[in-house]
Amino acid sequence: MWRVVMSRPLSADGEYDVDLAREQVPIAFAVWQGSDNERDGNKRVTHTWILLDTGLEGASDS
Image (cartoon, rainbow, N blue to C red; front, top):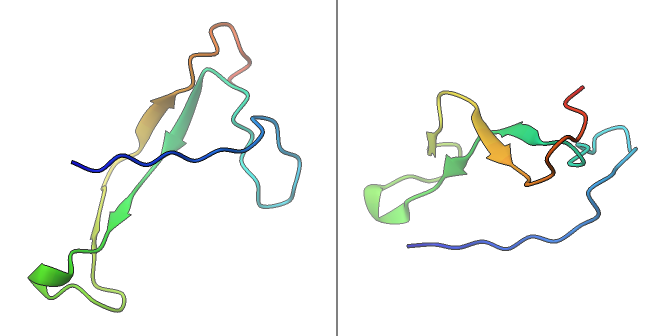
């Protein structure tokens, strides 16, 4: 099992930054598995959005 911890401010106003100060944020993942000969652009991806629950109840989802 993998666990990833990332840290940054929830609010962001940069052109390419996502604002995480909301109750749910849609995310997707790409996974590279070298033992399955996945390399370069070959990888597995989620085919639907996964909703990340930020735990910020009542936050704006706009």
